[in-house]
Length: 218
Image 1 (cartoon, helix red, strand yellow):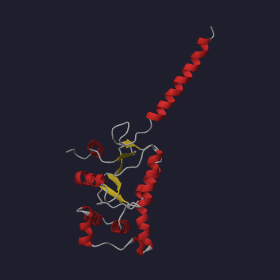
Image 2 (tube, rainbow, N blue to C red):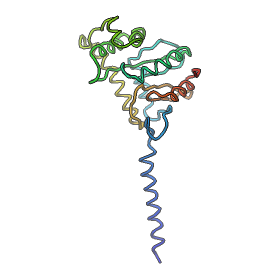
Image 3 (cartoon, one colour):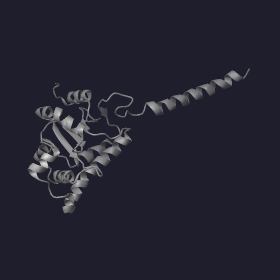
Image 4 (cartoon, one colour):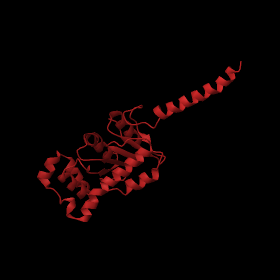
């Protein structure tokens, strides 16, 4: 006759634990391609650190005076190239300053790539970046030559590492927000001053970014 009162709290406790396990497994902050569609997200943890890291990164830009969009990636990233080719012209027409931060992957980059990444970080020259991205990578080296190697000076070596450090720091911030780092990694502020971000390349994501930045849709 005493079994029912005893079983009730046990069942309630079991249901609570099952609920917590479900939340822990399925309701984590979304990872691109998993659980939720790819949509822009708001950064909630370490926003000040992200601001400092991006603003003091080795970005190059056309120097426009409107909204700011940061883009992190590496030279041969196909999604990064796709985003630029479909979006940059319209972003610039809408006065959005695209601030590109490039890094050379430690084990997967070529010597010429590392040289140009270091050169961009040292000079901060947008025309160099435009020329480098306007054709296949090898054509740039043929037409314009390869800059001095990063090993040529301590300054150039530091410039090469600068982009890698920014990428690693941003990756750590993303991890603390529950996301895996993907490129292109895109960051901008909304009208409330909150950091918004999108990782990867996706047609729907592009439309939503345009809407938030006030850029006309196609």
